[in-house]
Amino acid sequence: MSLFGSLTAAISGLTSQSRSLGNISDNIANSQTVGYKRVDTNFVSYITSSSQSINLPGAVIAKPSYTNTVQGTIEQSEDPLALAIGGQGFFSVALAKGTVNGQPVFDERQFFSRAGDFTRDADGYLTNGSGYYLKGWPVDPSGNPDRTTIAPIRVNQQVFNPIATREIQLSANLPATIPNSPVTTQAQLYDSLGRLHTVNLTFTPTLTNHWTMQVDVPDDINGATRGSIELNFGNGASPAVADGTIGAFGIATGLTKPATSAEGDPAAVTFTADFGEGPQTVSLSLGQFGKSLGVTQYSADFSVRNLTQDGVPLGAFSSLSTRANGDVAVNYDNGQSRVIARIPLVAFNDPAQLQRLDGQAFMRTPDSGEARVTDAASNGVGKLVIGSIERSNVDIASEFSKLIVAQRAYTANTKVVAATDELLQDTINMRR
Image 1: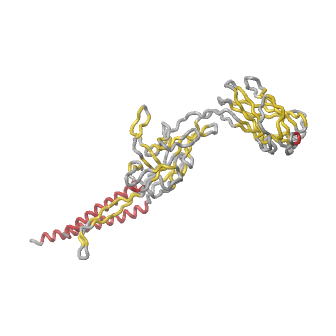
Image 2: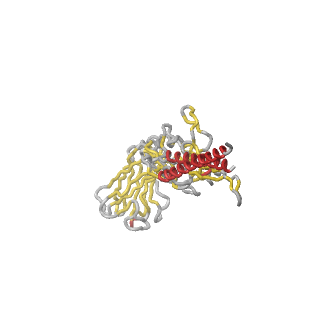
Image 3: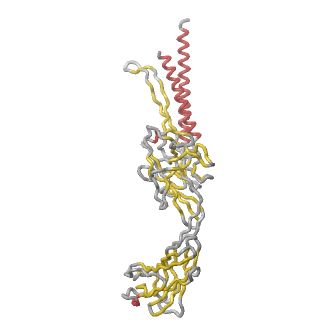
């Protein structure tokens, strides 16, 4: 019994060491695979019988030990869409099972991955090097994610619709000494079709601390002149305010004054313009009453410090980018951007129990626990590292050390088999 027991024990050792060699070879082969998690080997002994007086040879088996929670090296990538996870968590991904009318049809099963080498394919989907499609939460026009649904992220190249100008902000200084002629400046605004138009602002002195501002829009179909309004500065206002600041508006023609003019209230007037698409109301902000903001009256020179407007022209697709909070944003050549989705991260109670699949992907199992989908850098999941990838967590030097040990252990087991075979042969020869 003991001879056959030692033979079977040695054979089980050969089987276990061969499995260990298989894990080592798999690790070495995938040492450069993005997001790969190495497989270690645990050896477990099985006892036939063991007591204080006798121990019979048993067996050994090799069980895989998965390192799904061991972080790989994060490396910067040249691809701006590449993503890595610093810490725990997985990307939620989808797998295409075919196409209908040229568009992919996705497998209903849930897949997860740490491979973040994402790029945009010909159909606008974000896919990694293994062909899995990145999933995310859709967002509303305000950029708020809908956390009740998750789907593959697809980027279209629609234009960014123009936005008509609603406000012009002017920050300028009028001369304290009355000039011989009016001073002028120009602002610009966009209509609802994204066309750019000029607004001429003319400031004419009437008395000390009193000016008249006229607004002209040459492209207006109803005539260029939009209106005029008196500006009263310092002690020219009633009540008087700090020298050089707007204290009140006087008579207005065609322009609408604010309801109140207390110190600190917005000093803004509104006018309308029509470029063929109907009246467009624009607010012209001149600062605040009684404050050295916006339009002031100091020194002897006219100068414009700042002149901005909030309209946006038509924009074409320029690029795609991701943000640290997971937002996927489309950037346009008019300087605007639009968030189209948010990338969540998925956590499990025991990630080591996930089912491994082709392409560095995983599936949930009863032992891994439920998939918890949450925002990046929250609820125990890692943070997103933009423009980077996670390399394999395989250490080549460590794997070669394991390889040497496994090889020697395998050789030693063959020696036990050979020795046991000779002893069994000697036992059989005893009958001669």
